[in-house]
Length: 128
Image 1 (cartoon, rainbow, N blue to C red):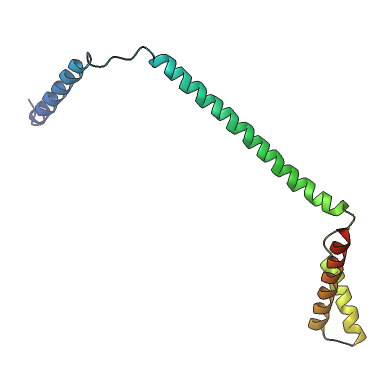
Image 2: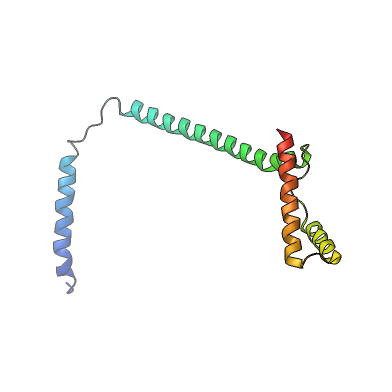
């Protein structure tokens, strides 16, 4: 016998003892008569809940996509016109003010933005 054989004997004894305990306990465990119907019902409920979650998730995704694609289109087609002005237009207006010599570049941009905000507020006020 090798020197490792002595180390395995206590381990084998522990496994043998464990197997005898499990074998003896085999008579203690008995499933109830309604175990299968309860398990099937729980599985059906879980499947139903999953389908419901998928439907609501799909509906939420549809609403999100509709809002993401429809809202910008609505803003562009509204009677207010587009809610934005390109920056090139703002800089062109500021350059005209600077060319007139009345103000500097920074102040001209401030005035252009102030005018734009006033125009947008007026459009919003008239839409009510």
